Amino acid sequence: MSAALSTDTKNILGLRLPTDPRWVDLTTISLEAILTDHAYCEQKAALTCISLIQRYSDKVELVAALAPIVTEEWGHFRLVLAELNKRGLSLGKQRKDIYVNKLLEFQKKGGHIDDRMLDQLLTMALIEARSCERFKRLSEGLPDIYLRKFYRKFMESEAGHYTLFINLADTYLPKPKVRKRWQEWLQYEIDIMKAIELRGDRIH
Image 1 (cartoon, rainbow, N blue to C red):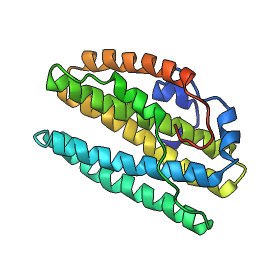
Image 2: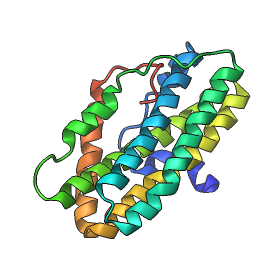
Image 3: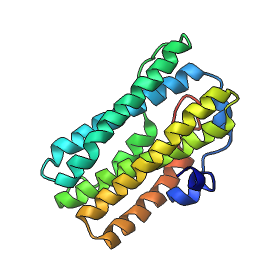
Image 4: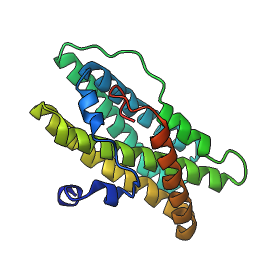
C-alpha cells in the first residue's frame, strides 16, 4: 500500500480536483484547531458506521465489515485526543462540516432502499478518499516531522476505508450501477471543492 500511495494519490483515489497546496500552510496557523476538527471527524466516522449497521442489520457482509471499522475509527479519535493532550492543547467545540453537509444534500432520500444505501456508502467512500488525500498533504508538507509520520499512518488507514465502502456497494448492487453513480459523486464533489472556503482549521 505504501508504495502505491507514494505515487499519485489523486489518481488512485479517483478524486478529480486536488487540494489547494496552500491548505497545508493554513493548517500550521492553529494546530489546536486542525487536531480538534480531525478528532471530531474520526468520532463522526465511527458513529456513521454504527448507524449503517443499525439501519442495514440484515446485510451480513456489511455488518461484518463495518464492526471493526467502528473500533478503528474510535481508536483514531483517541489517538488524536492523546496528541492534543500531549501538546497541552484542548479539544475544542465541534464545528459545522460544510463539506460533509453538502455531500449529504446529494444523497437520494426517496426511491428504493438500495439506492439510498448506495449513496450512503459512496458518501463514506468519498469522505474517506478526501481525508486520505488531505492526510497525504499533511504527511508531506507539515514542518513538524513527528506530525508528518503521525498523518502518514492515518493516510494509509483512510485509503483502505475508501476501498472498503466501494467494495460493500459492489457486494449489494450491480457494479456498472455503482461505477456510474460513483462518477456522478466525483463530479459533484468538484463543485463543492470549488465553492467552499479554503480553511486551515478544517480537515475537509
